[in-house]
Image (tube, rainbow, N blue to C red; front, side, top):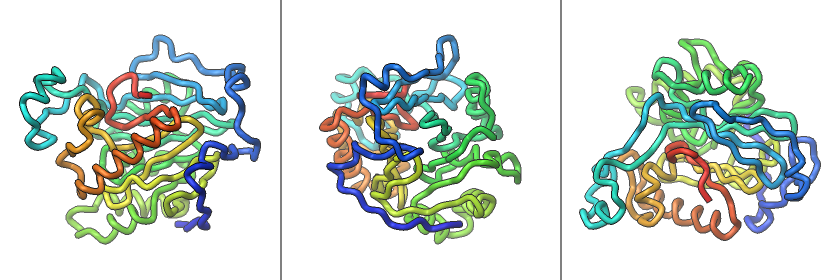
Length: 288
């Protein structure tokens, strides 16, 4: 396990980051000339090309249609439920995000894993990839539907990847009682020689910046790359929480902090014209 040196960036400068090979970001005109991978006909996959020429992929990890019940968000007034037309549940997903940038493959979270019937490996295969092709894994947080795909039994899945997670998330889970952190301890131990822990607002490999999104978990992280903001579990019910940010899923450990993070990062995305990709956003997975 490695701690990486602190490199703090002002928020205003985050859109001018360097990429993996040290080159500056491409203009929109240059990005349009970049070779991209077609996802036409591939089930559970959608894609966008970013302003710097990187290509991002949304990979649906769940097998079947998924809707979260409105009761997951506490006592939502019936008039809000009716106005949104979500009486039968809020469209959702369990998913991961893949990024192709400067010749590197970057995976954000690893989904449920094969034991949880996760489809990540099938999605990678459909794109012509294997886990050995992944250069970096960036973890938003340590819940099982985000790190379950890191292991196959006791064996690591991403043998060639460097793994990044926030120091606050690591510390929070490692200090939990043993009956609550068994998977988390097992995954972190398995990847200890590939693991890098960061503090927020650091620039990480491939020009990715880690942002504070705490609330859902102790060190929940969002990641900024060009005009893409990967927000992890900032949303569990987009149709509700986009307009009513005050509602939290029962899973959120610190609801007040979760609301603050959701409002702050949504405003940042709007101000800067970013795509948002979240691990429980419904298809197509990218929202502006």
